[in-house]
Image (cartoon, rainbow, N blue to C red; front, side, top):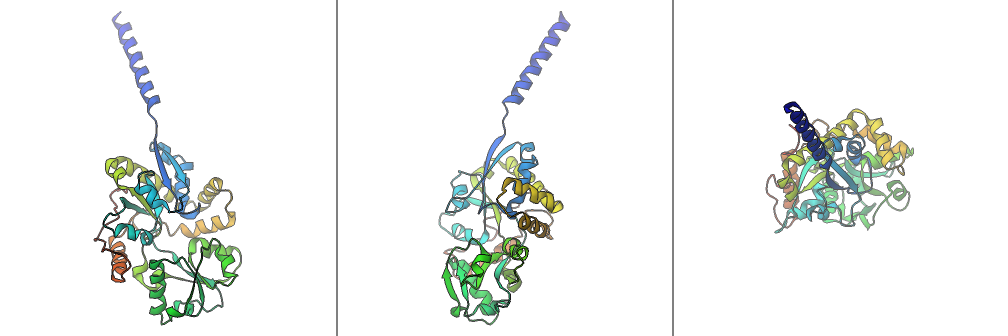
Length: 325
């Protein structure tokens, strides 16, 4: 009789354990993109497709950004994570009521943006933008960067014909009356090569090292990461695994992105993925690492140029604390 009771209790214990496991559900996480899906985001889709998020206990939804971008959605707590940029988020940090978000990872280690133009148009250096038509977003930070690189190269910034316009297709724009466009080489530069169009491109970071700021970045809601430290670490570990996979397997990673977004140009995605494989982490010790000197130097530059209302304290707005050791 004693043995039967022991067996019965063991069975009951097993049933309770199995029931508890069945009742345990993954945590729902929302991450907001900065734009339509592209190779900046590949690590996200890899982590989702390969089950890295699920293995870490997360059910992740990747969503398109609202018109105002990811920052406000993350700041309001409607999404735990989002993709932003160190330059455009600066005003939200330089405020009496800073947006409650923190950069928790650098998606790409260096600033790959710059000015692209058709080859032979004389804009192979910043000085060449003088007397040319530039498609501007009409943002103070953007214009200050253009002014800085042009004047440092001896060019006449005031002579640039600034035309406010939203460029969705750089190659199409350059074949109109637009001479120069701010572009990210990994996408628009590679797109021009894929289409057999010869272009000139100069990167801002090559003109002035202070412009080697972090773009794009992964931001997180402050309340969420403070209340869920271990979950945040687990999420970033799974995401880092996705980007490491993309670094080691660019062709396979490209196919995963194309599966999630079949509307994308396959050749562009694959070529862009190969180029970014060496850029996601570059020389950093780990994917996602943010160098404080580079972070601070850029914000100090914005303050010196009068582009933000308040000085952003050293080390403010980012953390490496949630990255894997």
